[in-house]
Image 1: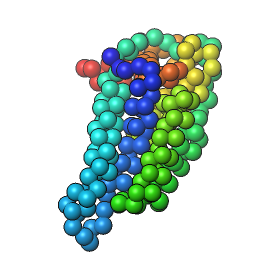
Image 2 (image 1 turned 180 degrees about the vertical axis):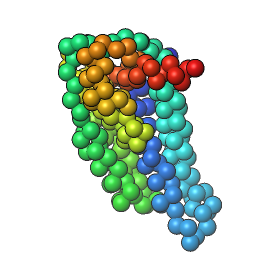
Image 3 (image 1 turned 90 degrees about the vertical axis):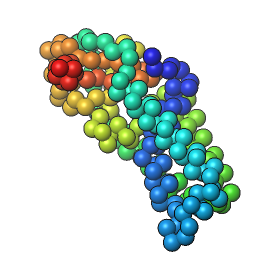
Length: 196
């Protein structure tokens, strides 16, 4: 089963920066100098990013193979509104580490590490596990919802119109919870085709 609670939120936060970890590894290496020496001199930096990459991969696998799926219609009275702007605002937090981080510069490392922790505390405290740029890259969309018991946001590859049609026609969809008040919605027909 998927982990719940505080730890789960932190794991989602770490995975939300998945693309950034690769950028921070490849963009912060001086390729005109000895790469192996740079890695050995800054091993804590590179090992930390490598661990974060592994955590992110684990989280993504757990997300797409999630336990606890329920096949049922969306609530008839539910109202949906697209909310992709929140995701774009979150992407802005990628910019600071890329522009300001200096490997080997202790004050720079401490400043960026502190910033990462502060953003994490806000992310976890606000239960915004739906803010994950990688999901956007993979084609998922964010929707704010009301009158959906236990949920305030949905994540789905289905478009707004498709979700509305599914709700109106009371079609069966796959639903599974990935965090506090956040559900992933998948088309039941698509899931059945994949299983075959």
